[in-house]
Length: 436
Ligand code: HAM
Image 1 (tube, protein in one colour):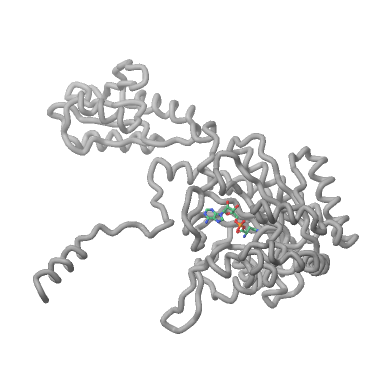
Image 2 (cartoon, helix red, strand yellow):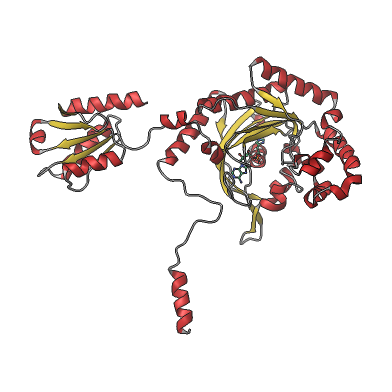
Protein backbone atom coordinates (compact mmCIF):
# COMPACT_ATOMS: atom_id res chain seq x y z
CA UNK A 1 0.00 0.00 0.00
CA UNK A 2 1.40 3.36 -0.96
CA UNK A 3 1.65 6.15 1.54
CA UNK A 4 -1.13 8.06 -0.22
CA UNK A 5 -3.44 5.00 -0.19
CA UNK A 6 -2.77 4.44 3.47
CA UNK A 7 -3.54 8.05 4.20
CA UNK A 8 -6.77 7.88 2.26
CA UNK A 9 -7.83 4.72 4.06
CA UNK A 10 -7.06 6.28 7.42
CA UNK A 11 -9.09 9.31 6.39
CA UNK A 12 -11.97 7.02 5.47
CA UNK A 13 -11.75 5.23 8.81
CA UNK A 14 -12.00 8.53 10.65
CA UNK A 15 -14.76 9.90 8.48
CA UNK A 16 -17.68 11.00 10.61
CA UNK A 17 -20.58 8.65 9.90
CA UNK A 18 -23.82 10.50 9.34
CA UNK A 19 -27.42 9.42 9.34
CA UNK A 20 -28.85 8.00 6.14
CA UNK A 21 -30.36 10.59 3.79
CA UNK A 22 -34.05 11.18 4.47
CA UNK A 23 -33.91 9.85 8.06
CA UNK A 24 -33.92 11.85 11.27
CA UNK A 25 -32.74 11.66 14.86
CA UNK A 26 -35.48 12.68 17.24
CA UNK A 27 -34.11 13.97 20.52
CA UNK A 28 -35.38 15.16 23.88
CA UNK A 29 -37.32 17.32 24.61
CA UNK A 30 -39.01 16.84 21.18
CA UNK A 31 -39.40 13.10 21.81
CA UNK A 32 -41.60 13.94 24.83
CA UNK A 33 -43.97 15.67 22.41
CA UNK A 34 -44.02 12.59 20.16
CA UNK A 35 -44.71 10.35 23.16
CA UNK A 36 -47.56 12.62 24.31
CA UNK A 37 -49.12 12.59 20.82
CA UNK A 38 -48.89 8.80 20.73
CA UNK A 39 -50.33 8.48 24.25
CA UNK A 40 -53.27 10.63 23.15
CA UNK A 41 -53.85 8.35 20.15
CA UNK A 42 -53.81 5.28 22.39
CA UNK A 43 -56.32 6.86 24.77
CA UNK A 44 -58.74 8.09 22.11
CA UNK A 45 -58.54 4.97 19.91
CA UNK A 46 -58.79 2.76 23.01
CA UNK A 47 -62.09 4.40 23.93
CA UNK A 48 -63.46 3.29 20.55
CA UNK A 49 -62.41 -0.30 21.20
CA UNK A 50 -59.24 -0.30 19.08
CA UNK A 51 -56.37 -2.55 20.16
CA UNK A 52 -52.75 -2.08 19.14
CA UNK A 53 -51.23 -4.26 16.43
CA UNK A 54 -47.47 -4.48 15.87
CA UNK A 55 -46.56 -6.06 12.57
CA UNK A 56 -43.00 -6.65 11.35
CA UNK A 57 -41.22 -3.86 9.49
CA UNK A 58 -40.14 -6.43 6.92
CA UNK A 59 -42.62 -8.16 4.67
CA UNK A 60 -42.53 -10.24 1.52
CA UNK A 61 -42.34 -7.83 -1.42
CA UNK A 62 -45.31 -9.58 -3.02
CA UNK A 63 -47.59 -8.29 -0.22
CA UNK A 64 -47.24 -4.70 -1.39
CA UNK A 65 -47.19 -5.54 -5.08
CA UNK A 66 -50.56 -7.25 -4.70
CA UNK A 67 -51.93 -5.07 -1.92
CA UNK A 68 -50.91 -1.52 -2.84
CA UNK A 69 -50.72 -2.20 -6.57
CA UNK A 70 -48.03 -2.59 -9.18
CA UNK A 71 -48.88 0.64 -11.00
CA UNK A 72 -48.61 2.88 -7.93
CA UNK A 73 -45.70 5.23 -7.25
CA UNK A 74 -45.10 3.43 -3.97
CA UNK A 75 -44.56 0.02 -5.54
CA UNK A 76 -43.11 1.28 -8.81
CA UNK A 77 -40.53 3.69 -7.46
CA UNK A 78 -40.39 4.04 -3.73
CA UNK A 79 -39.89 0.69 -2.05
CA UNK A 80 -36.81 -0.37 -0.14
CA UNK A 81 -36.63 -3.84 -1.61
CA UNK A 82 -33.72 -6.24 -1.29
CA UNK A 83 -32.86 -9.91 -1.36
CA UNK A 84 -31.98 -11.44 1.98
CA UNK A 85 -29.26 -14.04 2.34
CA UNK A 86 -31.82 -16.77 1.65
CA UNK A 87 -32.68 -15.20 -1.71
CA UNK A 88 -36.16 -13.98 -0.66
CA UNK A 89 -37.36 -10.62 -1.93
CA UNK A 90 -38.19 -8.55 1.13
CA UNK A 91 -39.42 -4.98 1.49
CA UNK A 92 -39.29 -2.49 4.34
CA UNK A 93 -42.98 -1.65 4.71
CA UNK A 94 -43.91 1.53 2.81
CA UNK A 95 -47.31 1.58 4.54
CA UNK A 96 -49.11 -0.65 7.01
CA UNK A 97 -52.60 -1.35 5.71
CA UNK A 98 -51.50 -4.30 3.58
CA UNK A 99 -49.46 -5.60 6.52
CA UNK A 100 -52.42 -5.34 8.90
CA UNK A 101 -54.65 -7.13 6.36
CA UNK A 102 -52.05 -9.91 6.10
CA UNK A 103 -51.85 -10.20 9.89
CA UNK A 104 -55.66 -10.28 10.11
CA UNK A 105 -55.73 -13.25 7.78
CA UNK A 106 -52.68 -15.01 9.11
CA UNK A 107 -53.95 -14.85 12.70
CA UNK A 108 -57.57 -15.75 11.79
CA UNK A 109 -58.89 -12.54 13.30
CA UNK A 110 -62.11 -12.98 11.31
CA UNK A 111 -63.07 -15.38 14.13
CA UNK A 112 -63.22 -12.48 16.57
CA UNK A 113 -66.42 -10.45 16.98
CA UNK A 114 -66.70 -8.24 13.93
CA UNK A 115 -65.60 -5.59 13.19
CA UNK A 116 -62.02 -6.00 14.33
CA UNK A 117 -60.48 -2.64 15.24
CA UNK A 118 -56.71 -2.26 15.18
CA UNK A 119 -54.34 0.67 15.45
CA UNK A 120 -50.59 1.03 14.96
CA UNK A 121 -47.80 3.50 15.53
CA UNK A 122 -44.52 3.06 13.78
CA UNK A 123 -41.98 3.70 11.04
CA UNK A 124 -42.63 3.32 7.31
CA UNK A 125 -40.08 3.54 4.52
CA UNK A 126 -40.33 5.13 1.10
CA UNK A 127 -37.54 6.07 -1.24
CA UNK A 128 -38.78 9.57 -2.03
CA UNK A 129 -36.91 12.79 -2.65
CA UNK A 130 -36.48 14.18 0.87
CA UNK A 131 -37.83 17.64 1.63
CA UNK A 132 -39.70 19.29 4.45
CA UNK A 133 -42.42 16.90 5.60
CA UNK A 134 -41.17 14.12 3.35
CA UNK A 135 -38.72 11.59 4.68
CA UNK A 136 -37.48 8.19 3.68
CA UNK A 137 -38.22 6.87 7.13
CA UNK A 138 -41.34 8.45 8.60
CA UNK A 139 -43.83 7.45 11.24
CA UNK A 140 -47.52 6.81 10.86
CA UNK A 141 -50.29 6.55 13.42
CA UNK A 142 -52.95 4.46 11.75
CA UNK A 143 -56.23 2.70 12.45
CA UNK A 144 -58.02 -0.05 10.53
CA UNK A 145 -61.57 -1.32 10.97
CA UNK A 146 -62.01 -4.75 9.38
CA UNK A 147 -65.15 -6.74 8.73
CA UNK A 148 -67.87 -4.12 8.33
CA UNK A 149 -69.02 -2.62 5.04
CA UNK A 150 -71.69 -0.19 6.27
CA UNK A 151 -71.50 3.60 6.10
CA UNK A 152 -71.74 3.92 9.89
CA UNK A 153 -68.24 2.44 10.07
CA UNK A 154 -66.90 5.08 7.68
CA UNK A 155 -68.47 7.80 9.79
CA UNK A 156 -67.32 6.40 13.13
CA UNK A 157 -63.75 6.11 11.90
CA UNK A 158 -63.73 9.72 10.70
CA UNK A 159 -65.31 10.91 13.95
CA UNK A 160 -62.61 9.10 15.92
CA UNK A 161 -59.89 10.69 13.78
CA UNK A 162 -61.32 14.15 14.38
CA UNK A 163 -61.68 13.50 18.10
CA UNK A 164 -57.99 12.63 18.20
CA UNK A 165 -57.01 15.76 16.31
CA UNK A 166 -59.20 17.87 18.60
CA UNK A 167 -57.52 16.30 21.63
CA UNK A 168 -54.27 17.67 20.15
CA UNK A 169 -55.93 21.12 20.10
CA UNK A 170 -56.25 21.31 16.29
CA UNK A 171 -59.04 23.57 15.13
CA UNK A 172 -60.71 24.30 11.85
CA UNK A 173 -59.44 21.24 9.96
CA UNK A 174 -61.53 20.20 6.98
CA UNK A 175 -61.90 16.64 5.76
CA UNK A 176 -61.65 16.26 1.98
CA UNK A 177 -64.03 13.49 1.04
CA UNK A 178 -64.75 11.55 -2.11
CA UNK A 179 -65.92 8.20 -3.34
CA UNK A 180 -64.00 6.19 -5.91
CA UNK A 181 -66.79 3.65 -6.19
CA UNK A 182 -66.71 -0.10 -5.89
CA UNK A 183 -64.48 -2.17 -8.14
CA UNK A 184 -67.11 -2.39 -10.89
CA UNK A 185 -67.80 1.35 -10.96
CA UNK A 186 -64.09 1.98 -11.00
CA UNK A 187 -63.48 -0.40 -13.88
CA UNK A 188 -66.31 1.24 -15.87
CA UNK A 189 -64.91 4.69 -15.18
CA UNK A 190 -61.42 3.64 -16.09
CA UNK A 191 -62.68 2.69 -19.55
CA UNK A 192 -64.49 6.01 -19.95
CA UNK A 193 -61.48 7.99 -18.88
CA UNK A 194 -59.23 6.07 -21.25
CA UNK A 195 -61.63 6.68 -24.12
CA UNK A 196 -61.53 10.39 -23.34
CA UNK A 197 -57.75 10.69 -22.80
CA UNK A 198 -56.44 8.50 -25.64
CA UNK A 199 -57.10 11.08 -28.39
CA UNK A 200 -55.25 13.70 -26.28
CA UNK A 201 -52.25 11.50 -25.61
CA UNK A 202 -49.88 14.05 -27.16
CA UNK A 203 -50.93 16.73 -24.68
CA UNK A 204 -50.11 14.55 -21.67
CA UNK A 205 -46.88 14.61 -19.70
CA UNK A 206 -44.63 11.60 -19.91
CA UNK A 207 -45.66 10.57 -16.38
CA UNK A 208 -49.34 10.66 -17.31
CA UNK A 209 -48.72 8.73 -20.50
CA UNK A 210 -47.19 6.03 -18.37
CA UNK A 211 -50.16 6.15 -16.03
CA UNK A 212 -52.50 5.75 -18.96
CA UNK A 213 -51.33 2.17 -19.14
CA UNK A 214 -50.87 1.45 -15.45
CA UNK A 215 -53.28 3.54 -13.42
CA UNK A 216 -55.24 6.15 -15.40
CA UNK A 217 -57.24 7.35 -12.38
CA UNK A 218 -54.05 8.78 -10.95
CA UNK A 219 -53.89 11.25 -13.84
CA UNK A 220 -56.77 13.07 -12.12
CA UNK A 221 -54.26 13.98 -9.40
CA UNK A 222 -52.07 16.00 -11.76
CA UNK A 223 -50.95 19.49 -10.86
CA UNK A 224 -49.85 20.33 -14.41
CA UNK A 225 -52.01 23.31 -15.53
CA UNK A 226 -52.34 22.11 -19.14
CA UNK A 227 -53.51 18.69 -17.97
CA UNK A 228 -55.84 20.27 -15.44
CA UNK A 229 -57.48 22.22 -18.23
CA UNK A 230 -57.85 19.11 -20.34
CA UNK A 231 -59.33 17.20 -17.42
CA UNK A 232 -61.98 19.84 -16.84
CA UNK A 233 -63.76 18.30 -19.82
CA UNK A 234 -63.20 14.70 -18.74
CA UNK A 235 -66.04 12.40 -17.72
CA UNK A 236 -66.59 12.40 -13.97
CA UNK A 237 -66.23 9.40 -11.74
CA UNK A 238 -69.47 10.34 -10.01
CA UNK A 239 -71.32 9.64 -13.25
CA UNK A 240 -70.02 6.06 -13.34
CA UNK A 241 -71.06 5.17 -9.81
CA UNK A 242 -73.49 2.33 -9.25
CA UNK A 243 -76.67 3.03 -7.31
CA UNK A 244 -75.21 1.17 -4.29
CA UNK A 245 -72.01 3.22 -4.34
CA UNK A 246 -74.04 6.40 -4.57
CA UNK A 247 -76.23 5.39 -1.66
CA UNK A 248 -73.23 4.44 0.46
CA UNK A 249 -71.65 7.85 -0.09
CA UNK A 250 -74.93 9.65 0.60
CA UNK A 251 -75.33 7.74 3.87
CA UNK A 252 -71.76 8.51 5.00
CA UNK A 253 -72.26 12.23 4.34
CA UNK A 254 -75.59 12.30 6.10
CA UNK A 255 -74.13 10.75 9.27
CA UNK A 256 -71.19 13.18 9.15
CA UNK A 257 -73.70 16.04 8.79
CA UNK A 258 -75.61 14.80 11.78
CA UNK A 259 -72.45 15.02 13.89
CA UNK A 260 -71.51 18.43 12.54
CA UNK A 261 -68.32 17.28 10.79
CA UNK A 262 -66.68 19.89 8.53
CA UNK A 263 -65.98 18.19 5.24
CA UNK A 264 -65.73 19.13 1.60
CA UNK A 265 -66.46 16.77 -1.25
CA UNK A 266 -63.54 16.90 -3.67
CA UNK A 267 -64.17 14.76 -6.72
CA UNK A 268 -60.52 14.98 -7.75
CA UNK A 269 -59.41 13.11 -4.67
CA UNK A 270 -58.41 9.65 -5.88
CA UNK A 271 -55.53 8.69 -3.51
CA UNK A 272 -52.36 6.99 -4.65
CA UNK A 273 -52.94 3.40 -3.59
CA UNK A 274 -54.86 0.85 -5.65
CA UNK A 275 -56.80 -0.85 -2.89
CA UNK A 276 -59.33 1.91 -2.31
CA UNK A 277 -63.02 1.39 -2.96
CA UNK A 278 -65.88 3.79 -2.20
CA UNK A 279 -65.06 6.33 0.54
CA UNK A 280 -61.66 8.06 0.43
CA UNK A 281 -60.55 11.05 2.46
CA UNK A 282 -57.64 13.28 3.33
CA UNK A 283 -56.95 16.05 5.79
CA UNK A 284 -54.50 18.75 4.80
CA UNK A 285 -52.90 21.38 7.02
CA UNK A 286 -51.73 24.79 5.97
CA UNK A 287 -48.14 25.74 6.72
CA UNK A 288 -46.66 22.48 5.47
CA UNK A 289 -45.89 23.60 1.93
CA UNK A 290 -46.38 21.18 -0.93
CA UNK A 291 -46.51 18.12 1.33
CA UNK A 292 -49.64 19.20 3.11
CA UNK A 293 -51.61 15.98 3.67
CA UNK A 294 -51.39 14.99 7.29
CA UNK A 295 -53.90 12.13 7.01
CA UNK A 296 -54.97 9.83 4.22
CA UNK A 297 -57.46 7.02 4.33
CA UNK A 298 -60.37 5.20 2.86
CA UNK A 299 -62.28 2.01 2.37
CA UNK A 300 -60.62 -1.07 0.88
CA UNK A 301 -63.29 -3.72 0.45
CA UNK A 302 -61.24 -5.80 -1.99
CA UNK A 303 -57.85 -5.85 -0.26
CA UNK A 304 -58.25 -8.96 1.88
CA UNK A 305 -59.54 -11.03 -1.02
CA UNK A 306 -56.67 -9.75 -3.19
CA UNK A 307 -54.37 -11.24 -0.54
CA UNK A 308 -56.07 -14.63 -0.86
CA UNK A 309 -58.59 -14.26 1.98
CA UNK A 310 -62.38 -14.33 2.06
CA UNK A 311 -64.30 -11.25 0.92
CA UNK A 312 -63.80 -8.89 3.87
CA UNK A 313 -64.46 -5.15 3.83
CA UNK A 314 -62.22 -2.69 5.62
CA UNK A 315 -61.63 0.99 6.16
CA UNK A 316 -58.81 2.93 7.79
CA UNK A 317 -56.53 5.90 7.84
CA UNK A 318 -52.90 6.75 8.50
CA UNK A 319 -51.66 10.00 9.95
CA UNK A 320 -48.18 11.17 8.98
CA UNK A 321 -46.80 11.71 12.48
CA UNK A 322 -43.80 13.79 11.36
CA UNK A 323 -46.07 16.24 9.54
CA UNK A 324 -48.63 16.23 12.34
CA UNK A 325 -45.97 17.25 14.84
CA UNK A 326 -44.63 19.87 12.46
CA UNK A 327 -47.96 21.73 12.65
CA UNK A 328 -48.93 20.72 16.19
CA UNK A 329 -50.80 23.52 17.97
CA UNK A 330 -48.73 25.37 20.55
CA UNK A 331 -51.54 24.82 23.05
CA UNK A 332 -50.86 21.06 23.07
CA UNK A 333 -47.08 21.50 23.16
CA UNK A 334 -47.40 23.67 26.27
CA UNK A 335 -49.20 20.85 28.02
CA UNK A 336 -46.37 18.36 27.50
CA UNK A 337 -44.21 18.16 30.60
CA UNK A 338 -40.55 18.21 29.68
CA UNK A 339 -37.45 18.45 31.82
CA UNK A 340 -37.16 17.82 35.48
CA UNK A 341 -39.05 19.31 38.44
CA UNK A 342 -36.34 19.48 41.07
CA UNK A 343 -32.56 19.63 41.20
CA UNK A 344 -31.12 18.55 44.57
CA UNK A 345 -27.65 19.70 45.60
CA UNK A 346 -25.55 18.91 48.65
CA UNK A 347 -23.83 22.07 49.86
CA UNK A 348 -20.42 22.55 51.46
CA UNK A 349 -19.16 19.55 53.36
CA UNK A 350 -22.30 17.49 52.87
CA UNK A 351 -21.61 14.37 50.80
CA UNK A 352 -23.26 14.25 47.32
CA UNK A 353 -24.97 10.96 48.18
CA UNK A 354 -27.18 12.90 50.62
CA UNK A 355 -28.56 14.64 47.52
CA UNK A 356 -29.11 11.20 46.02
CA UNK A 357 -31.15 10.19 49.09
CA UNK A 358 -33.41 13.27 48.98
CA UNK A 359 -33.87 12.94 45.21
CA UNK A 360 -34.98 9.36 45.92
CA UNK A 361 -37.61 10.58 48.39
CA UNK A 362 -38.92 13.01 45.78
CA UNK A 363 -39.08 10.37 43.06
CA UNK A 364 -40.87 7.96 45.41
CA UNK A 365 -43.53 10.66 45.76
CA UNK A 366 -43.84 10.94 41.96
CA UNK A 367 -41.70 14.04 41.45
CA UNK A 368 -38.99 13.99 38.78
CA UNK A 369 -35.75 14.87 40.52
CA UNK A 370 -32.10 15.08 39.59
CA UNK A 371 -29.31 14.96 42.15
CA UNK A 372 -26.07 16.89 41.62
CA UNK A 373 -23.63 14.00 41.33
CA UNK A 374 -20.53 16.13 41.77
CA UNK A 375 -19.79 18.91 44.22
CA UNK A 376 -20.67 22.35 42.85
CA UNK A 377 -21.08 25.84 44.18
CA UNK A 378 -24.62 26.92 45.06
CA UNK A 379 -24.49 29.57 42.31
CA UNK A 380 -23.49 26.92 39.81
CA UNK A 381 -26.30 24.57 40.83
CA UNK A 382 -28.84 27.39 40.56
CA UNK A 383 -27.62 28.12 37.05
CA UNK A 384 -27.80 24.45 36.09
CA UNK A 385 -31.29 24.16 37.57
CA UNK A 386 -32.35 27.03 35.36
CA UNK A 387 -30.83 25.47 32.25
CA UNK A 388 -32.47 22.14 33.00
CA UNK A 389 -35.85 23.86 33.24
CA UNK A 390 -36.31 22.79 36.88
CA UNK A 391 -39.00 24.46 38.98
CA UNK A 392 -36.90 24.39 42.12
CA UNK A 393 -33.39 23.76 43.41
CA UNK A 394 -33.23 22.01 46.78
CA UNK A 395 -30.14 22.77 48.86
CA UNK A 396 -28.90 20.46 51.60
CA UNK A 397 -26.30 22.09 53.83
CA UNK A 398 -24.83 20.61 57.02
CA UNK A 399 -27.27 22.56 59.18
CA UNK A 400 -30.31 21.49 57.12
CA UNK A 401 -29.16 17.89 57.20
CA UNK A 402 -28.81 17.91 60.94
CA UNK A 403 -32.31 19.34 61.48
CA UNK A 404 -34.01 17.19 58.85
CA UNK A 405 -34.70 20.24 56.73
CA UNK A 406 -33.97 21.53 53.24
CA UNK A 407 -33.77 24.94 51.56
CA UNK A 408 -36.12 25.18 48.58
CA UNK A 409 -35.36 27.83 45.98
CA UNK A 410 -38.24 28.38 43.58
CA UNK A 411 -36.64 29.29 40.26
CA UNK A 412 -39.66 31.04 38.81
CA UNK A 413 -40.34 33.41 41.72
CA UNK A 414 -36.83 33.47 43.20
CA UNK A 415 -38.42 32.84 46.59
CA UNK A 416 -36.38 30.80 49.07
CA UNK A 417 -37.81 28.90 52.05
CA UNK A 418 -36.56 26.39 54.53
CA UNK A 419 -38.87 23.46 55.10
CA UNK A 420 -38.91 20.12 56.86
CA UNK A 421 -37.97 17.38 54.36
CA UNK A 422 -41.46 15.91 54.29
CA UNK A 423 -43.00 19.35 53.74
CA UNK A 424 -40.59 20.08 50.90
CA UNK A 425 -41.50 16.79 49.23
CA UNK A 426 -45.22 17.51 49.72
CA UNK A 427 -44.88 20.97 48.21
CA UNK A 428 -43.20 19.70 45.07
CA UNK A 429 -45.65 16.81 44.80
CA UNK A 430 -48.51 19.31 44.87
CA UNK A 431 -46.87 21.37 42.12
CA UNK A 432 -46.35 18.27 39.99
CA UNK A 433 -50.02 17.42 40.43
CA UNK A 434 -51.10 20.86 39.21
CA UNK A 435 -48.97 20.33 36.08
CA UNK A 436 -50.73 17.07 35.38
P1 HAM B 1 -50.71 7.54 2.39
O1 HAM B 1 -51.56 8.65 1.88
O2 HAM B 1 -49.72 6.96 1.46
O3 HAM B 1 -51.72 6.43 2.90
O4 HAM B 1 -49.96 8.03 3.69
C1 HAM B 1 -50.67 8.56 4.79
C2 HAM B 1 -49.94 9.75 5.36
O5 HAM B 1 -48.59 9.40 5.68
C3 HAM B 1 -49.78 10.92 4.40
O6 HAM B 1 -50.93 11.74 4.40
C4 HAM B 1 -48.59 11.66 5.00
O7 HAM B 1 -48.99 12.50 6.07
C5 HAM B 1 -47.74 10.53 5.55
N1 HAM B 1 -46.62 10.24 4.63
C6 HAM B 1 -46.62 9.53 3.50
N2 HAM B 1 -45.40 9.52 2.93
C7 HAM B 1 -44.59 10.26 3.73
C8 HAM B 1 -43.20 10.62 3.70
N3 HAM B 1 -42.38 10.21 2.74
N4 HAM B 1 -42.72 11.41 4.71
C9 HAM B 1 -43.54 11.83 5.70
N5 HAM B 1 -44.84 11.51 5.78
C10 HAM B 1 -45.37 10.73 4.82
C11 HAM B 1 -51.33 5.25 3.48
O8 HAM B 1 -50.21 5.01 3.83
C12 HAM B 1 -52.50 4.32 3.73
N6 HAM B 1 -51.94 3.08 4.32
C13 HAM B 1 -53.52 4.95 4.64
C14 HAM B 1 -54.67 4.05 4.96
C15 HAM B 1 -54.84 3.32 6.06
N7 HAM B 1 -55.69 3.79 4.14
C16 HAM B 1 -56.50 2.92 4.73
N8 HAM B 1 -55.96 2.61 5.90
